[in-house]
Length: 242
Length: 242
Image (cartoon, rainbow over all chains, first blue to last red; front, top):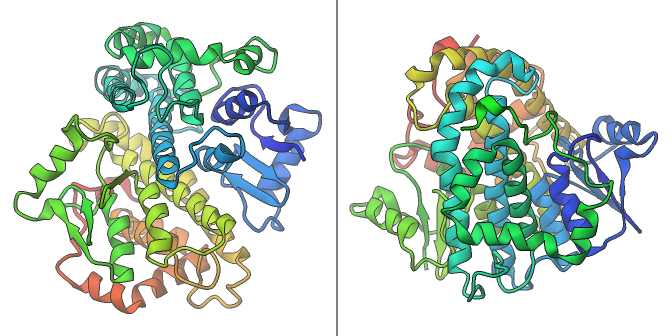
């Protein structure tokens, strides 16, 4: 049976990290809320008191009777099933740990343009965002990127810098997610991101080579891949870049 | 061999969520950075290029050759080993999913007093904090608490409201973490938290009954349990409560 992915239509958002894994694996899935009536189905899952294990928020995955929310937990569940995670328990936990760090990174990227409240418009917190952005560009962005660089450098399977992987010698969902982070950051803050990328050659190489994956390339060129926009996590407000 | 927990001394912080699990299970562990020379040992793990799988930040756990960072990943690893997680894979993933939601909740609590940058003092972002706090108290705090209430209500093992558990009929690390969240919030924002607690009786009951656990009660009364203070995640700034 096809996986059901529930996520807000109209943005890539957190759902995209799950989508990239499903697409790279060629797994059959329904992108529920993008279909007619799908938003109602998603909201039913969120609000229905009969759901024993309710998601806190989208994205969530429905696989038969199993309902799983939290992007990193969904990917942890899907990883072995999609052959996008290593076999050994400790390796699998390491991929998950990297994914959780990507989750933290992503939350910080989001909060650059929403430092006061997710419920307010950017325009209502632009002043605070202008204060937060320089710290993100100067401290947090390089710190996260250098950590991913260290992880790639220290992976013994990356003997050369061509097509590096975060864990072992095969593509994992964490590679897909790091590609997406860099792609999103290049959209949101092209100046700051390009500057940092010059200092993290393994991360840059991963970002260049991951989208050459055959199925992923087909997805990225398809209409299923939404463009970045100013409703999602990665938003291009030129005043926050520099 | 004893587990080694590495975390900043002087605060409860994220390390406390791991500590509560180790203490409740009566597991032998070293709180490395609290011992003489321990900070240097912790920083070596963070900076040493020979560490193949470097932690991004404390807390991290060392178990023999395994090094695991990320609070939720540490607890996922420890859960079955400490008998603080259910046996079935889907149940274990559900506990983990709850823990990841606690992680998100905790990050939001922290960012109430640090909406601009973790690297700045509170006093340097007090204005922004004063804007963020009402949204947290009015929207986010009740939303998270209502979700935990729903999880407790819908757990079929909680036939009565006395001593409820988030998952199944036994204590899990997520119960310990939710207790800690409520405890910390009662310290940081007593007015707002008490008001919300009146609307979530299962959460209030969990917070009342978890610390009656024998080993946990002994820990909470010991000197190992640091008091809350204005360096950690939960900080009492009266102007942010209300």
